[in-house]
Length: 138
Image (cartoon, rainbow, N blue to C red; front, side, top):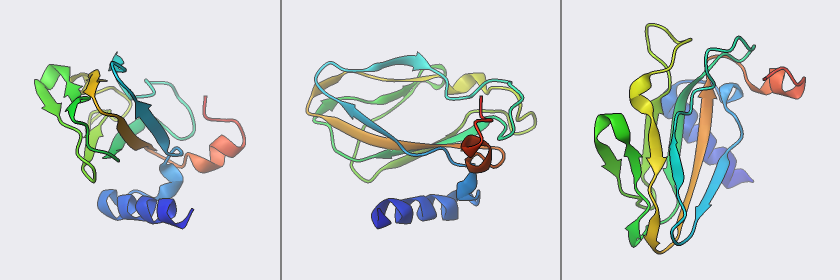
């Protein structure tokens, strides 16, 4: 879809990382009392051609009346969903891109009222698209 491609181009402009390093959009839909437990977006220290996931670019596609925050546990930070809002966070350490940034564990808090729609691109250190076509991404 042209609109999706336009959003990816905008993300590319913001991050200055080419789209070939992006995994496809992940589309998220949370209803009442749905959540996602604490986790980390890094792909670990595996040695695969695209390298680790280095960034998450997260887009809120809806307002949520109550709940549904993205909570960064180790940072003591919660972000309320708001349509049009974007979050960007690193998965790895700048000086050591093969190692997780342990501060970036996060979770999707339960939706209390309303629905939460969101989308994210996971962005790799190197080209993801080419190796993925050949089944070389892990």
